Image 1 (cartoon, helix red, strand yellow):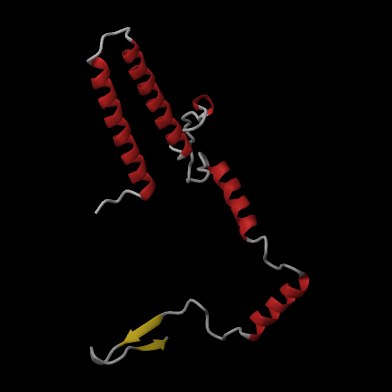
Image 2 (spheres, rainbow, N blue to C red):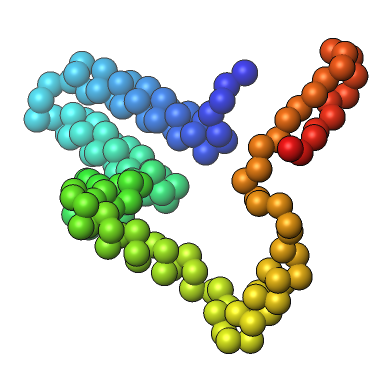
Length: 149
C-alpha cells in the first residue's frame, strides 16, 4: 500500500503522462528534417505541452506562480536553552529575577502575614521538627511501625 496522498499520486501521474508525451513528440520530431514545417509544428507542440504541464503544477500549488518571489532558504537559530550565567554575579542576578517572577502572584499583605503567624502559633508542636525517626519491623511480612524518639 502506498503512503502517498491523493495529491501526490495525481502529481506523479501528471508528470509521468507529461514525460511520456514529450518523449513521443521528440521521437516523432527527430525523424523529420530540421527546418521543415512539420518539424516546427512538433517543436510548437512540445513547447505547448511543457507550458500546459507547468500551468497544471502551478494550479495544484506544486510550484509558485512567480519563481522570483519564491521564498529563499533562510536559517533561523532557535535555542531552547535559557540564559546560562558565566560567573557568580550573573547567576545571582538571574536567580533573583527568576525568584521575583515565581513569587509575583503570592500575597504578602499585612493581613495574610498576620494570618500566617496565627496558623504557625496554633500548630506549633512541643517537639522539634528535625527529630530522629526509627522504623521497627518485628517480622518481614508485618507492616512497618514508626516510632518517634
